[in-house]
Amino acid sequence: MEKITIRAGNQTYPVLVGFDVKNHLNAFIKEQFPQLTSILIITDETVGDLYLDTLIEKLEFPSIRTKIVPAGENAKTFEVFHDCLTYALEEKLDRKSLILSFGGGAVGDLAGFVAATFMRGIPFIQIPTTILAHDSAVGGKVAINHSLGKNMIGAFYQPSAVFYDLNFLKSLPASERRSGFAEVIKHALIHDRKFYLWLLENIGHLEQLSDSDVVLFLTEGIKVKGSIVEQDVNESGVRAHLNFGHTLGHAIEAEVGYGSITHGEAVAIGMLFALKLSTELYSLSLNLQEFAGWLEQLGYRTELPENLSVERLINRMKQDKKSVGQTIRFVLLPEFGKPKVDEIKDDYLFKKLEEFQKG
Image (cartoon, rainbow, N blue to C red; front, side, top):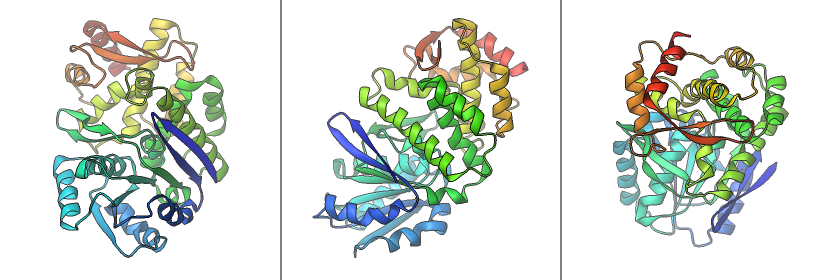
């Protein structure tokens, strides 16, 4: 078991990574919340069917409630958010209650936002069940989606702990493995060449990953995320670098419809495009052909989905949280480990997206 300490402003919390770390959850809750009145587990239909009974068996508390929400981005709506709050009120949760977020990144975003807003904030613990959640479970960004943009309604609200039991990853379908691994690639690119080259050399497919490789790349990714969060909790500076690949990625998700393409698969396309801009604007030393070939070997698409309008993508990107005064801002990579946020003019971006679309 690996233990990583996250420091976010005046809050510090542990991230436990390994197999069977769920066995330590009950003792942690008893120690940290001696006046606990009730637990609400928020999970989705898929994880609930597979693992909810296993989790409940590990908890020695008489008052446990469960709320099942839709899987994926369909969980991050105003309607589901409101339904969770209604359920919490009907079940008489109070300020001494605890929420357990049990699922992937979407469930974590939703459950964290429920925790942040219920009675002005009650504690929650992240229990991720996907590779993608190694990124989203750490750092305290919680949110739901709006029809005009992804994660537009949310808060910065840190968990009390993250229990990352890697046994839960064994049932992930191939698309979810790709979705999560894209964020690992992102962490490597914005951190240093050494981590990227290790991934390039050691991860040639995602179907059967060794336990040791999974532990290594997840803990490295979490450490990269943690180091950036420690410097900038509320994304007023360097934390924006974690959005590498996300400006275009989020626009793609919104245009094709949330859930029609996974978050990580959209971000992979966004990263490839951002790297193309980086090599042109900054002469980034990276073999783009090798990178694109590696993505394809891992099962990612490397082109924009068919029939997407470049003009509509640009309008979506203007609604991105990093945009200022309708000016699109991209995280680019002048060199490994040194990302920066750049303003990109509409006409240049339009031209480059058209070139990218044509291949």
